[in-house]
Image 1 (cartoon, rainbow, N blue to C red):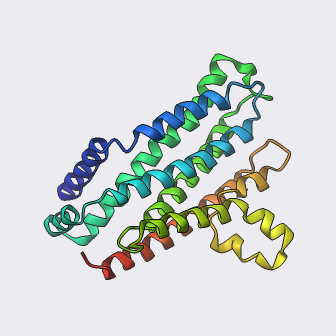
Image 2 (cartoon, rainbow, N blue to C red):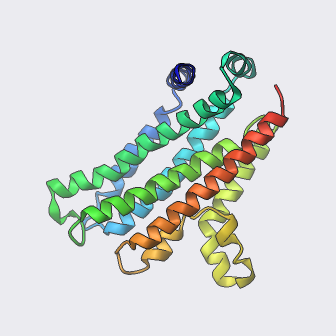
Amino acid sequence: MKNLYSLYKLRMKIVYKNAVLVIPFAALVIFLGTMYSIKPVQVSGSFLMSGIFLFVVSSYISMTIQFKENDTNEEIMLLHSNSGINYYISRELTLLSISLCFAMILTLYPALRAAINPHIFKRPLELTDVINGGIIIIGNGLVGISLGDFFHQRIFTRKRNAIIGLVLVSVLAICKQSIIYKYSFFKFMNYVMPPVMDGFQMVGSTDIFDTTGTIIILLHTILFALVIMFIKIGLLNHQKY
């Protein structure tokens, strides 16, 4: 456990040293300022849009971090870790903690604004809205870091191909409902693509979260992230330093 914590601390120091989070935090401030500047705000829509924002930002963060990884430093960390498991867990924890930090801000900010100005939303903001909306935001962040790290520089040796792959999958994930609506034989995309936009379909025009639907989306998100993670680790183990 001590070795794992040391690896995690070292990775976070590298992230801060490389100033990877400067642009994402600036984008976060601009997004929140813009999102809640037009009143009244739709409750579900604000959380769902925040989820899409975090998906994009998390993808950017995870891809930027792995692009800045130095093969020599990574090999040294792998050799000095007690096991390969600690090495890979430290990578996942670094990305996850950053994404969760952004998710907490995106989730709690509307609650704070509603406490200051109850009329900012079209209807009263309830605790269930914050919980369900927060779950959607966290899930989209998880998908984002999973995809951004999957297109790793050791798996996709050409940076251009990695970026194209990430953009392509992201666009398909965002547009899958429209594609399925127009071409029904693409229904399989509901299962193989992450549920980035499923929250919008669940809410529809009601502006009310469905708790059961939110849990289903969360389970789909976790399953997708786990599958992507294990495939990525397998490929990274195959592509030695």
